[in-house]
Amino acid sequence: MTNPSDLTLVVIPTYNELENLPLIVGRVRSAMPTVDVLVVDDNSPDGTGEKADELAAQDSQIHVLHRKGKEGLCAAYMAGFTWGVEHDYQVICEMDADGSHAPEQLHLLLAEIDNGADLVIGSRYIDGGKVVNWPKKRWILSRGGNIYISAALGAGLSDMTAGYRAYRRELLEKLDLDALSHAGYIFQVELAWRAVEAGADVCEVPITFTEREIGESKLDGSFVKDSLLEVTKWGIQHRLSQLQELRGIFTTLARERARKRRELKARRRMRDAD
Image 1: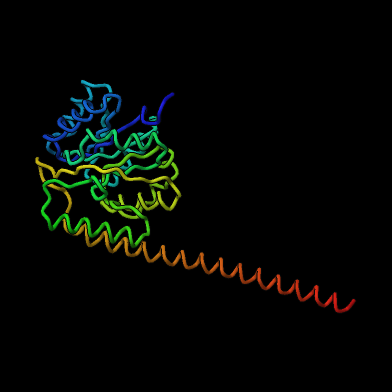
Image 2: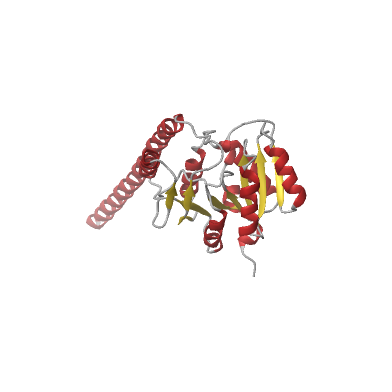
């Protein structure tokens, strides 16, 4: 009997990750020999794309998707997801190129996929999860932001900004990836929220997130402000939608109650007439 994870693709977006790329790809192939890797490179000026081609020439389970320029993480993942679906993979995973996501923990995500989950998120903030080499201020900002995001959207997830994930292809096909409303890192939140809203089986497993040792983070400070504003807007829209649904339910119940009263009065009039 085969499992969905038997046909798994790990999508690794890159931009100027020349030093990190051979390390992370090597770790993935060592930790999960049956898993394929797709490097999605945004025309890195440091030669990352060429290095990816070298790795692919040496290993048939490594693939490379070259893009014309730096179009952002969301666009890179959408291109990778599309490639994976078109090439008939049953599970498609996200993983950072900088080593912050341990390939040695990928089996935890895939085990939950095989147990029936549609989306598995590697969480830093459930029991057993942790963050290594982050300043306390950044941890507080991230943790607090995730608490706010989950509360605002009513999602019930601890780490909606996490970028270590495994998706069933059926979920990616069901979600309208082209309609993602934001091109930045906030797409991680939106994808998780849309999955929850669609009734998908979404779960979290604990992982250890380790801040990169080589290169610089591509996350800028404006992300937090923009993300929370966007989430607040979604949360308000979600609550208004819920209120409209409740209004519809109450209206239906009131009409049904009025109908039953009219029927009761009609029966009484008929009885009195007799």
